[in-house]
Image 1 (tube, one colour):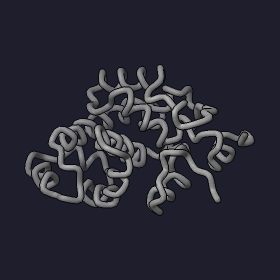
Image 2 (cartoon, rainbow, N blue to C red):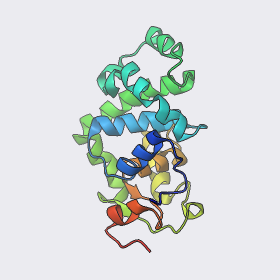
Image 3 (cartoon, one colour):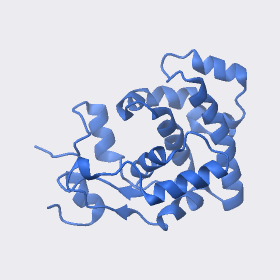
Image 4 (cartoon, one colour):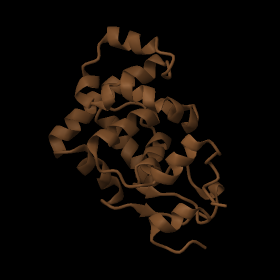
Length: 192
């Protein structure tokens, strides 16, 4: 029997996400944008809820192309709000457009969003050694700094907890617990 992090349920979709994506370093700007939007959509909900809707989000949000999302108008937002395959929250939908515009500004200034966002962890994954799920924090000084900096640049739905979840999802931090089979693979350390 394979041991996984305590948050992973038995749904094959969730297992696949845990085993193949969560905690793996992401340096592709489009994927980083996707995760930023989806983590904002998660606010107040479970990641599992968002994960079940991710394929529909990819279709409805033009494969998370920030140039296209930045151009969404009120008619497009109304269309998205009518889509039962999405999380129909007007503030979260508007945040996607706002964040696309801010994302493009960061790309313009830094050459890539990747170059900008990874500075919050010094350009390399922070590899934690949590023994159990209860040890994993909801936020850290790094996610506090990221949240503050993103808000200053005009991003919304980027509180410290959302930023920390984004950091976990994109491998900026490695938070697989020590008993999880992915811990040894991603940390370079032997599982205890």
